[in-house]
Length: 282
Image (tube, rainbow, N blue to C red; front, side):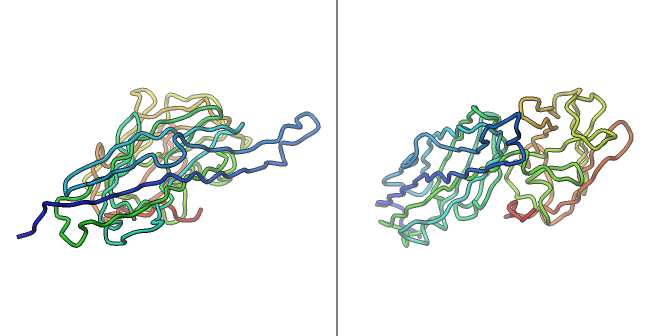
């Protein structure tokens, strides 16, 4: 029988903001001499999640505010990496990340790699809730250990990531995209007019369908499950696909299709994995 008493675990999680500045010279015309940049920051900037004397089954929760201080809308991601301390403890911690709409990620702390968190408009911000948990089954080999972890946030201009072909946007458009169980992915897409320009108007006959083994889910503007984001510089449609709300089967392949009326304008297959990787290169 395991002795689960007398733990003296100190888990120090440190937030490190990675600032990425992206310049868009194409916008620096004679009519517009503005320097465009992406500027991401967090509050607090470090030490936002500190847990001392954790016992198996204990959790520690803290809220982190992510802000867009630049003058471009951006898409942003988060990764974790061990800075120092015990590797075994780092590998065992379970992390949950939520926003004000619900779950975003739940899985191993060491599995948080380039995890897409969505889009923040310039001047906007978003609160994220991080919860670290030491599983009940943690053994005596972790007793008295500590670990220090860095969370790296990175951002890139939203417009910069809009593909010239197809209609889906990152992270869903990334090559060999796979979906992680117990996660929420923003499925974003845009429509173009007959001249190839991005449409800014909202259509009420647009539908996103995600189908596969044991599932057929539909997202529509008319029922509120599909949003048209007009606040961003380049408007797009957005569906919040959560494996908690829309169950899918591990190791099976599903297909997302965008309809305008009865016409399919783009589609993409994807595979569901227990520990998926949504950071595949575009």
